[in-house]
Length: 151
Ligand code: DQA
Image 1 (cartoon, protein in one colour):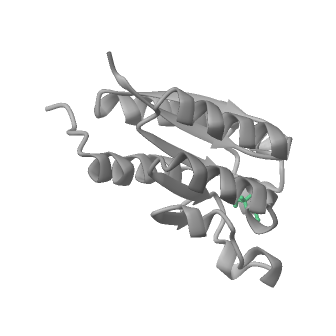
Image 2 (tube, protein in one colour; image 1 turned 90 degrees about the vertical axis):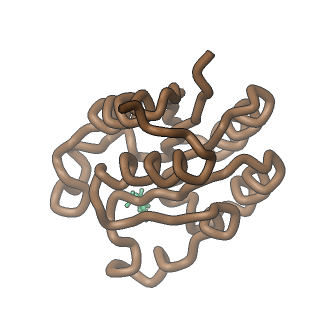
């Protein structure tokens, strides 16, 4: 059976496509999730894609990834990235290789976006590539966990 990676999107990412398109682009969460499923499939991985606007639900989803023994986590925790010790602790607790993604270049934006609690629990962070960052993150995760691309 294919190994599963969890792709977790946090608050307001359900609004991708209409939300501040100058910053986040015109592609939707459905586009993100298709990109993730297609990219994962190239490595014979399956992508379990979830989005929630609630912090505790993100914690629960990380625990679910842990109990299902997911091979990796890709997470864009949205604004909770900058505030949530609970999400940080959940990621550290499940010990699953994690990549943090942001659609926008958070370092070129307001200073309150420059700190990330998620980054401290992830082996890599990607930001500023638009939704392509999710695809790049899955490629990096696949390399990290030794998943080989189909010929
Ligand atoms: C974001 C960046 C965060 O600062 C912001 O709160 C978001 C989206 C991004 O993908 O660029 O909601 O995570």
